[in-house]
Image 1 (cartoon, rainbow, N blue to C red):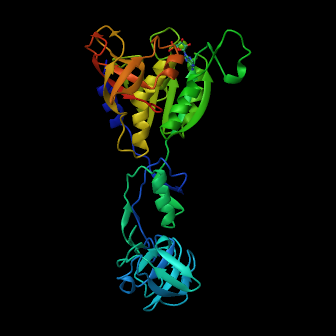
Image 2 (cartoon, rainbow, N blue to C red):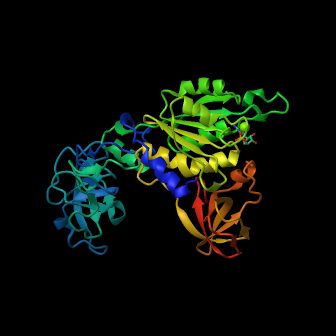
Image 3 (cartoon, rainbow, N blue to C red):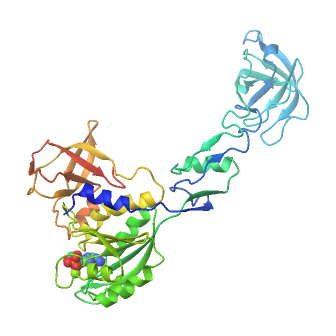
Length: 404
Ligand code: AMP
Ligand code: MG
């Protein structure tokens, strides 16, 4: 049986990075850039005023003070979007608004609050230095600057930057398409609730949500009975997907057919079972560049296995560099004990207390329980050889999405 680290290394060694595609800049949010972006222009494209005030020649107002204001005549007006129609000479000023082009001849802006105006006469009560309140052409970005490099994870500020450069589209890594199949005679679809005694297939929805959160595109293959032919038939719809996820039927029960079916479909099994709890009966295989994860059926086992192996794989496919959840030192609120042998992932809530993390298990850890996984924002990771942690003991905790 592989350790969690060995299993993850094996998975990642098989993961291809997706090719790129051009998409709109909003679709690119949260995806990884696959091109270098250079600026075609200076930003701002010309010198602009940072304030509402008056553009003037700094030399004219060198002696200005509240007790001896300097008089200038207002000869022009420059507003954002429409510059002045004449240059500024000695003894002259132009009205400017924030973002307005600085008229030729002016080399400083004085804030409106430091002036008094009567008709076209301006009294400046404060000396200003050259370039005061002027944002210079190219101060933000110069033409030809490399503003974004391949591998950047695109944030809202990157979207703003791309828009300011006039880019409506950008090249990013494709999202992996991920087929999801649930198996089990005891299961029914969401819209079949009236069938008494059956369990709703929640794994499909959990896995779709996890795939979306990891930047993939889920493709639902539905539900198959514990029947090798039906499982094989459903899986044949996955030929155009990059990754295939199944859940359940992968343990040692009489009706656990998933591994056998994958073998018949030409999937090369790379490992089965990982020394962890929950999530031990996990199988991983490949067929060409397609990846197959046969996840355990218990809802929390499926989600925890996804977290440890499928999420990093999907992130790598999407071009991401950083694949692991932050693994933080924390103090345990409570007591934990376990047998030696397996790494345990304990559902917990983790909070910052006096500047340090404190993790508290959320209660029953039965891998069939969904509510405790929903309550958890983190997983305490207990090493294989550890048996007991006392209150206040130091532990490691993996922070999940939505963690506080
Ligand atoms: P199995 O791996 O087939 O033995 O399933 C283990 C447990 O997970 C059983 O209690 C199943 O009822 C449950 N289970 C399997 N598949 C799903 C699913 N898609 N949604 C919710 N529970 C499931
Ligand atoms: Mg089953």
